Image 1 (cartoon, rainbow, N blue to C red):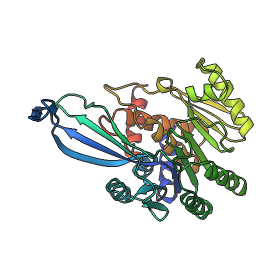
Image 2: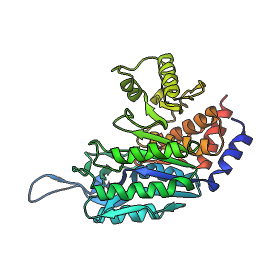
Image 3: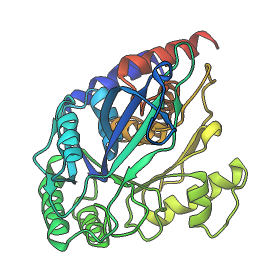
Image 4: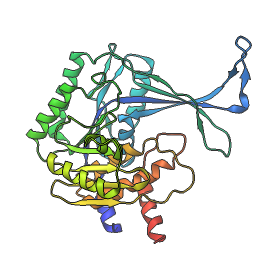
Amino acid sequence: MTSERFQFITSQYTQLRVAVVGDFCLDRYLEIDPSKQEISIETNLPVHNVVNVRPQPGGAGTILNNLSALGVGTIYALGFAGEDGEGFELSRVLNSRSGVRLDYFLRSSERRTFTYCKPLVLTPNKSPIELNRLDSKNWTATPAEIQELLIQSLEKVAPTVHGIILLDQVDIPETGVVTRRLLEAIQRLAKQYPQLLILADSRRGLRGYPSVVFKMNAAELSASTGFSEQRNIDWVKEKAAVLAKENGRSVFVTLAGGGILGATAAGEVQHVPALPVRGDIDVVGAGDAVSANLTTALAAGATLLEALDLANAAASVVIHQLGTTGAASVDELAEIFAMNAGSQ
């Protein structure tokens, strides 16, 4: 990608309106100073002293973080949190992000805030060490009235935005934002607004999803085709192309150390290899950075290859941000392109 195209595409981001629909989580990092470790008098067990608590949006909030870091002008958060302390904390950090609108973000006493509590041992001059995580989730079905409010919000937002990113983060179906009823609403909106960019990602796979842009990893692609094992890059290209043609929408496949692949309904297939690793890495959040950058780039008029290049660069930035669920800014993307242009 030329520097002129990079500047043109990224300069459009401030004019974009994007809705993030999905499971917003609170990532609560408990920063532990190992030099302050004690032994409990009552239990005789080690005590980890927390010297700082760092809250930030996770799940769909990680996509929102990346959109905000890219300078997207308006970002609608469509999801819910509980009427609990974690919900207050999540709403506060969401509201602190540039461009974010919480007009359609629900708070309900019938839901608890999805929380990832991450104890993190910080030692000077060493990579952070994450201890066993403590999660808080919803184990019951999302109430019908909350589902209806989310659908109503989605129907209001859809005609006003350039793109919608759909993220299903929960392990148990029907307990989060992306329920069967919401997917039916997405299907209606995709037909009503055929030019609207809707990108979907689900940790449980996209089988049964309406015909929107699919973003998945290689294992999910294999599962969707009925194969339990991943195949070589040519096999991934072939299956992604078939899926894109069947859906009538593009398919994007992340390949971890193998980079990113994209296929369009028209039959174009492009593969971008992963960029070189520069020291220690943490892959948490890389996929969400890819989703955010694919959506913004395509909404701004990027070609398939340009969108893949930008998403690949964002993943490279994020995996090198240790001890946090990272995000990539336009300036950081520019540095990656300059660095790799200089090494060629």
